[in-house]
Length: 464
Ligand code: ADP
Ligand code: MG
Image (cartoon, rainbow, N blue to C red; front, side, top):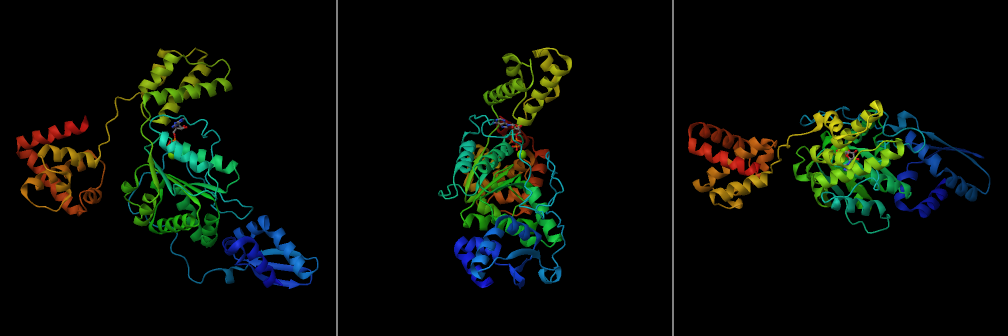
């Protein structure tokens, strides 16, 4: 009977669903009205109980021509576990990375034993498309996010994966959560996860020997949303992430990823993941300009007024904050919250002086500019009247060797890039070549005032 039931389920749900959920089911016992099915994991057990048990029951009754009672159990550890022990659970990161700045991950296992609890990272209901203010720097990212959030799984998948990158506090998480909320409300199966939590979940699943369930859970969603990709740690985890990415995309499911830099700059990332990301759509969110900062503050005020009776902020004060608290959305949040707190605590109206006092430490003297390696190459090439491709080439004539060394030296001193990364960006050179160039120029500027002056001129031009 089970064979016939299986065949019908396969026909009914299709190969994909069948393989994901039904394939590993075995008959443990079938005696009269009592049927006991076994599955390898607790996750599968609860998933089947919650989603498919009724269907199995119906089919079984039809095939058997009598009423039955179905029970699902987890097969005993001995038969279910692989004989080879998994690798040590914690793998060393390839290079030290700073800890995630906020939103710490909790210790709940990624996959729990009950219901369909597939513990994604929590969603903040305030982070929606409605509260995301559009500006010049985020129009494209917002449009792409909206498109992805509103598309149905049957639609042609336009941007897959969609990769959004931006510096801290520019709205990546806000957009990802807006996508998550919208898609979830439309009934799509979504999973929103920080890369850190993905790492944790995968490592924990190895330790608990539930890696299969981990994989299954990740394959059976319509939309996977991964935040802070720069915190995806460890070779094995990255390889697993790559499999997930491939499986989902090949199955026509949408993947959205956010990170703090363009794919080409994710130095510790598995090359396969990088190229898969580069094959989708990459959009950047630029710094929040003053207009956008003002619009965001206005919106915050509108919301705050609803919640806090009598609270108001004169437009001039919003303008002051927008002008002085630069670039980062988190600082903007902080500044606004202080105005609100000060007003609530002192019952004093919000004025410019009050704003000045309460946000003093958030006011930045113009942030140092982020200089790009391409720009250094361009400016240096221009200055020495060679082409940028000469600089990247392997030509060793004196006219290009020195400019190339200077460009590498500037790349090392003006950006935070590592030597191997700089080598890569200079036509695939070895990090020792870069190191040699840096030392050479360091030595020369100490001895040669003319060269020193030239380097200073180049620095000034780059900082303009
Ligand atoms: P990221 O994830 O890029 O570091 P977040 O999405 O956490 O940044 O944004 C930081 C704060 O700034 C959040 O409170 C967010 O709501 C706010 N923010 C950023 N961009 C916008 C925007 N365009 N409209 C409204 N709020 C924004
Ligand atoms: Mg974020």
